[in-house]
Length: 154
Image 1 (cartoon, rainbow, N blue to C red):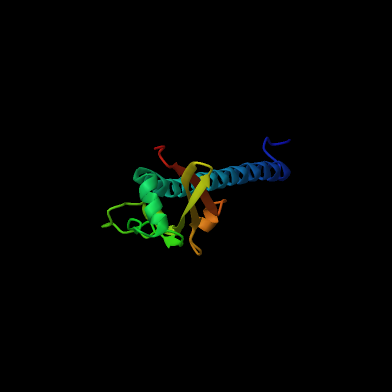
Image 2 (image 1 turned 45 degrees about the horizontal axis):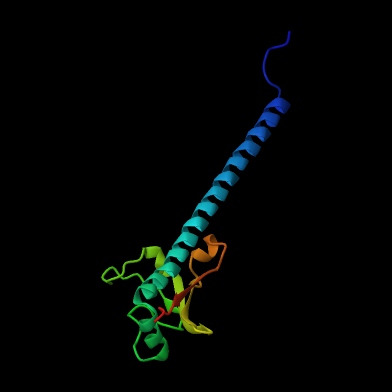
């Protein structure tokens, strides 16, 4: 008389199927976390690149031309033509998220002219600091944005 039940082979086969299903779920979760962190840090890098462009856009062409010519120094926190670490300082007038301290930023101003059209080209490059966790999470190592500030016609 046979007793109803499962054989050892059936149990091993079912465990193998469950293991593959569980492993695929863990891999899907890991991939989802990777993409979410990559998106967050890339968004933060774009925000850190966009910010000095908006500040300099508010100055206008004439003020930027004086900064480029060396007659006026740029505002604090916006060093020109040198890579600057973005440090977290809770008492600074401009507040960044704490994760911004894992980035460094290069702001370049360059005069551009074409015929009667004069402009200042602003190029901002944001990169991950070395030995930061951003190097693990972010696929793009640098983010660059450019903008032109045109001279107002007279």
